[in-house]
Length: 217
Image (tube, rainbow, N blue to C red):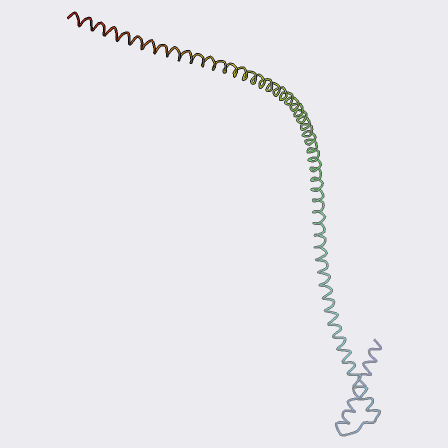
């Protein structure tokens, strides 16, 4: 406080001294080299004081703006911190939910896998049984086919034998038919000759009867 009073007194004294020098210059007086140096120093000191005052003012304004900016930054930081915390909470909740769902899904997958493996084993067993039945049926069918082929061969042999026998009988029958045809043709020839003879005899008898009857008249 004493220092401020001293500075104020010196500034008051300097202002009074500078006023007197200004009046002297206004009246056409001259300043000594020392007074000129003092005036120049005073002017420089006043400009420096004004500059310092302006700097202090600007510093104050900037400090106020910086404080306001820092306050806004703190508010934004608090806002985003709350948002981040809320987001992290949601992420944690979602992660927990997803982990639970994944575990449930994995459990269902394991249960489904076990069920499918059981069904596959059962299916493979049924396939093996079916293959065995197929093999048994194949053996049985092959046996039956062989037996059928044997019977077919026997039937074909009998057919061939029957065919040979029938051909022989047909040939013998044809021979007998040829003999009967020849005998029939011979008999027909004889019948024709007998018929012709009878016709001639009938004609002769008719002529004789007509002749006899004609003579009686």
